[in-house]
Image (cartoon, rainbow, N blue to C red):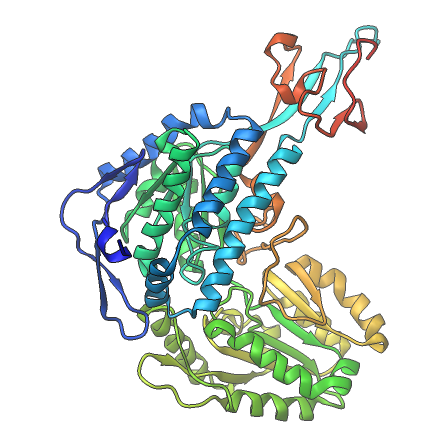
Amino acid sequence: MNASQTMAGRQFIAGRRIASGEATLLSLRAVDGEATGHRFYPASCEEAAQAAEAAQQAFAVYSQTTPQQRARFLNAIADELDALGEPFFAIAGQETALPLARLQGERARTSGQLRMFAGVILRGDTFAARIDTALAERQPLPRPDLRQYQQALGPVAVFGASNFPLAFSTAGGDTASALAAGCPVVVKAHPGHMATAELTAEAIVRAVVRCGLPGGVFNMIFGTDIGAELVRHPAIQAVGFTGSLAGGKALYQLAQQRPQPIPLFAEMSAINPLIILPQALQTRAEALANELVASFTLGGGQFCTRPGLILALRDAGLERFKSALCAAVAGSPPQVLLNAPTLQHYCQGVAALAAHPRIEKLASGIAAGSGQAQTLLWKAQVEDLLAQDTLLQTDVFGPLSLLVEVDDVAQLQAVVKALQGQLTATLHAEADDGPLAASLLPLLCEKAGRVLFNGYPTGVEVCDAMVHGGPWPATTDARGTSVGSRAIERFLRPVCLQNAPAALLPPALQDANPLNLLRLVNGQWTREAISSSH
């Protein structure tokens, strides 16, 4: 049976498929905007509420699962995703215009992330157990027995991204993080790839059934304007969002305006400055130019880490670099973007740059046909960047970048200070650039969640040490990350038990340490059991 025969288009609520009204939402081909033939039912306010309440009902059971149970569930989802075959990739390719190799790689990254989180849970990181045993004889006052661990925050609403239909969407980082933390989820399916979302959701539901978990552990609804209802619903205790600055700000305001405000972890907007220091420019001008164009045009420039701002000192090598950069752009083919709205936003951004009196077009790629985006390189004035011209710091989502020439070191430092928060910042430097790189590093660390050396930011490794976050407007909370094992912490909260009877202590806090956790006991990290002498 193929994908077109099995597509239901209904909401996923507590393990059931529910729909009311008419199936008015159409799945569209990215290439030409034509319908794929799949139709979906927009969720009603009542159905959105049912999904949130189903997650709330499941929370009591799911939040109390053992590390082994939860790890098994995440691994089961990964197995189900890895089993998705040709029909899945066919529809995902139609809806996003992403090539098969990219989609297969993204699927591997998504299932790999789930398996990594399963390992994190089994390792015991998420408990973060800290214990200070009682000091009955302490003067002037005794110390009570205090035991802290982290527990699940509550049901989480997830808004996936358009540009990564797997890794940052239905089964992506926010969903995986929330499930790893012990939080049921309600996903609002992205309207740009609803059929892909449905097939992914079905895979997750199969894992829920395999593991004998409550159906409300995973829910998903379709619609365009229904997301606000989820954020407002009192059962929802946190929100994960990946998307535009406007969308993230709107949801953030809703989350703060609730009678009980809740955290919203949004990844939104970044231009990801790439700085080329003088020696690097002299040594490898041509190579840098070619690699940089390959980076900012990768995947149609539809990466949130695309290097959208290039900074270089007016020095030897700059003209060679510019010439090579323009040549690489001129040879760059046009690309189909994810969908018509994405192309429209790109064209609007290009028009705004073209209308700016002090921004000039340096190079254009091969002319774009209907429904395609042309690669573009622009040059702006450093004075406008220093004056914090908002257009120069606006993320234009697509295959373009902006070059700014800087007069001297002092001006470069001032430019970095004038930048808004970023997901990434990149330094290209040779050994002789060391002192300048050293002076810039603290400034860049203030501005970005990840600082790279002699590389390109398009590509986010899934591992413990990764940070995919940064100060506003890159995210709504610079303390978190949406990639890496610390992503789970967003959906946990610390709880302290004081003088709790031994019989009531959760396994993570028991004297015997049955989970063999690395715990902070009386100021010392240890896996040993707590003896009666403590």
